[in-house]
Structures are given as C-alpha cells and as structure tokens.
Image 1 (cartoon, rainbow, N blue to C red):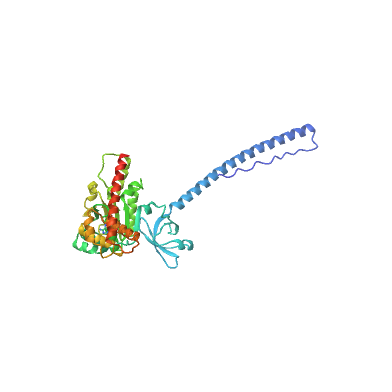
Image 2 (tube, rainbow, N blue to C red):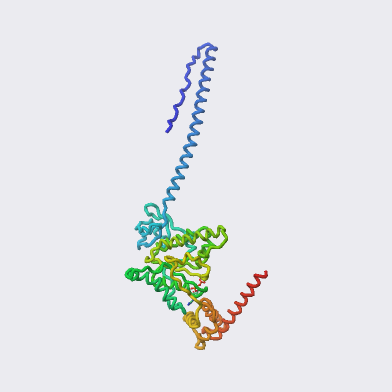
Length: 411
Ligand SMILES: Nc1ncnc2c1ncn2[C@@H]1O[C@H](COP(=O)(O)OP(=O)(O)OP(=O)(O)O)[C@@H](O)[C@H]1O
C-alpha cells in the first residue's frame, strides 16, 4: 500500500523589519516564491490524494459487488419436508443431492414456512427466502397432487387396461421384491395411447392414489408452446421433482408434442423440441426401473411417435385405451350419475345405444347437460327426457362446430 507523501516544509524566511527596503523587498519576493512553490506541491499532493480516493472508492464498490454476488450465489434451492410444532425447526431437502437437514428457522420465517414450500437456503441451511410459486416456471409447467382423488372404481369400461397398468406401475412400487426374486426388470415406462377423453389421465391418477404416490403431470404441448426455450430444463426439473417426492408417478400428457418423428424442416423450433426429447430420453436411460418413481405417458397420436422413445428401457409397455364399447358406455354413465337423483325411467343401456362413438369425457358432459335440463324444468330428479334433450343439444352443438370450422376455411 502506498504511504501518504509528507507535507512540504512551511516557508520560514526571517525578514528583519529593520532591513533596508531593497533587501526586505528581495526577501519578501523570495518568501513569496517559496509560498508559490509550497502551494504547487500541495496542489499536486491534493490532486494525487483525490485520484487515490477515487481509486479506493472504485475498489470498495467492486468489493461490495463481489460480496453481494458471493452472498447470493451461496444460496441453494431446497424443499421443506417437515415443520415441527413449535415452528422453530424444519427439515429441508436440498435439491440436486437430496441431502436432508434439520435446521433452525427464525421466528419470522417459522410462521410463514410450510411443508412442501420451495425455499432458498445458505451454506449453513438457514432459510433465506420462500420461493414464489407463481413466478416459478416449474410450478406453472407441472401439476402436482399429493394423492389424487381418483380411484379405480371411478373408471368405467377399461377393466383390462386398469389391470395392465396396475401390473406394470402399481406392483413394482408396492412389491419391488417380487421382481427382484423373479429376477426381471419391471417395465421402465408405460405409454397409454388412444383417442382423447377415454380415461388415460384418470388411470395415471388412480395408480398414484392407490400407491400413495405424488402425481406429477407435465403436458408435452405446453412445453413446446408456453415454455419455449425451457423444455429440456423443465424435463430435468420434472425428474428432480419426482426424486424429491418419491414415491412418485410422472405423467407426461401429449408426449407426441415432444417426441414426434423428425420432420424434414430444420427450424430452430424443431431443434428445441429435439433437445427436450433428448433430455427425456437421457433421464429415462439413467433411471432405476425398480425405484420408487414410475413414468406414464399418454398420446392421441401414436402413429406420429418417434420410435426412439419406444425402445426397451424407455416406454416399453404400450397400452391402448380405446373408445368405450357399449358395455363401457353403460358403466361410465352409471359412474357419472352416482351422485345424481336419477329417475327409474332412465335406461342406461338405451343411452349407450345412442352414444356410439362417445368418449368417457363426452359421456360425462352428457350427464351434466341432462342435469341442467332437469334444473331448467324445476326438478331435482333427472329423467330420460332430460338425457334425450341433452343428447339433441350435444348433437346440435357438434353440428355447429362443423359449420364453424367449415366457415373458418372459407373466411
Ligand atoms: N373410462 C372412463 N370412466 C369414467 N370417466 C371417464 C372415462 N374416461 C374419461 N372420463 C371422464 O372424462 C374426463 C377426462 O378424462 P381423461 O382426462 O382421463 O382423458 P384422457 O384420455 O387423459 O384425455 P386426453 O387424451 O384428452 O388427455 C375425466 O375426468 C372423466 O370424468
């Protein structure tokens, strides 16, 4: 460090008031020159000091900025797993290495923090802030349910598919030792394919419910449309989230949006979709098939899928979920009217005859619509006539859809 320069000596010339004028004048002039000289030296020193002050200020700013960066970069993301009764201690699990730590929290944080919150923690696991779920793309891109409210008894007409899913997803979760003893690997991933609204999402939710697993859903179409540029990171986050919350069921809806056969065009959008799919494949390849995380995907466009995702160790169990048969439609109508007051004259067999080609979701709408007709007629019981009117309305609306889509083409 440079030492501050010493001050110049004060001019100190003896001027005898009794000197002859000429001599005194000379002495005074010399004294004046001494003073000018000292002034110049002091000015130089002042300027140098000013410059040094400026340098030190810049240095201090730099150190402060580095300090801020150091402080902020030492925060890690963790999930709060447990908050103890007196709210002064919580268990957090750090993302990435899954380390679980019991840590103290300040009274201010203790009152706000809840199990399941994502938080920023410092090196010593002190909670610095609770991450805002709204601004968190992960939270927006994923739907998470601790144990969804759907049971197998809520699903009609696809008993065989329910059996297959239970065998491929549920059994490895609840009886992994059976697979170990027999010496086989359970299917890595299950792909449900078939028309929209036939119960694929319900099936995945029902397995999560049955196994007390967390249900984590991500829609392929949203990754491509809404979270442009973030697809591969979100896929990585999806698996990380599942590891944090295992046992977990990962459900990737509309997987065709990220795993379609490569098209000829080489636009940057395609490259992004491709990266997202590669990330998914690499996550699945590094996956423990007997672990506590199971993966289910769904698609309405099986024909478009890139065969790379169907290789062994990836989605290697394919289950078709078709449109419901006559018997299936009857069952689905019965399920969706369980909580309604249904008049004795309602004939589900006959309604099943009239709803050939309807999906489960459409049958559910039919029951709601029939209920609306009953309310319009000031009744609380729903009769066959309400179903007939609802059917007519749905058919008319469908007709209107065709007309409007035709109109679109001619616009
Ligand atoms: N087999 C079924 N049994 C009972 N209800 C059904 C069935 N299929 C569909 N539904 C009803 O339709 C709704 C939508 O079904 P779901 O989301 O499971 O369909 P999906 O096959 O996943 O459709 P998509 O391909 O459009 O995502 C369900 O909430 C349920 O009310």
